[in-house]
Length: 90
Image (tube, rainbow, N blue to C red):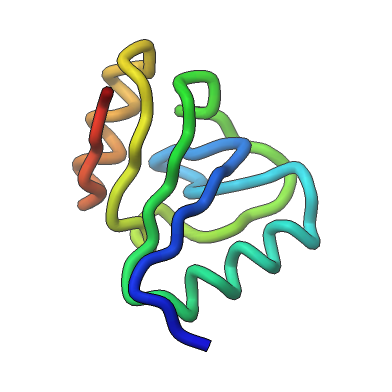
């Protein structure tokens, strides 16, 4: 399969640990979609920013765009942006 863009909802996203979730099977499924996609976008509210959970989906370098809300920690958003991820705060 191939997609132009994959949108992922995650339980955690951080500059150090990338995208994570609580469930190992979900992580494997999300990783497969991301690998089959030209670009990956992550949608995560402020409670997920800077957080790391059990199962790794992908490293931060695999993410093209992060969409979050205005309550997200600015320092962590800056670190994620420095890793090459476009951040969209709305």
